Length: 112
Length: 116
Image (tube, rainbow over all chains, first blue to last red; front, top):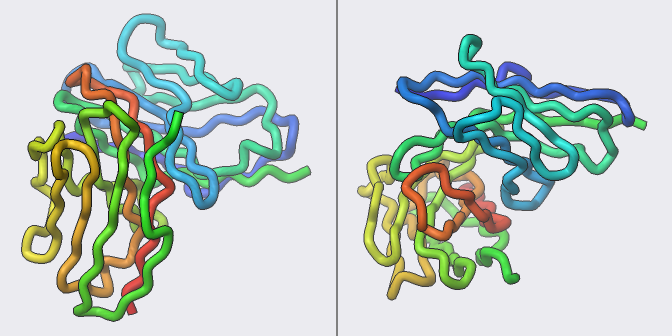
């Protein structure tokens, strides 16, 4: 069965500091992996996705994620966090038929 | 480009009442999804449409939930009768429908339902 685990419910970082949000997945085949961001009162917005090829993928807003098959992980990173990055972040795995399974999310707080 | 529109934005009802949510997709998007997002959890798929046909409704509680997508455009999701555990944000998402693998989803802002 496919599943997504985001171990960190809440993370607080200082503005300008680096960020890493963890995501582990369980899926029998080659996964399609995604990171979405949800700002308060808004719908989810796609940050980046991994299908195949280069295991380091670049996304919007300066985010990147690295796929590590050996660790079943797809961690999201940003070298320098801005106050506007405060939001909820969801990792998701996709399977054939456009079925998506979302993690429980990580809430990011950015302090000045 | 206009995004995915959902209404109402908020809804408060008492248990055993009925409620309906409406979604207008991005023009031309073939796939439409309804997700339920309970507080503190990630979105969970309720139903997936491809044009006006149902692709997957395996997680839709069919004894109380129903959904339709008339003419492959707008969609409504109905709950009748509502239970306390239905309190959640109901998200509509759409996609171009050109790929069967990992298409980009465009989400609406959701309808926040509170069942008292």
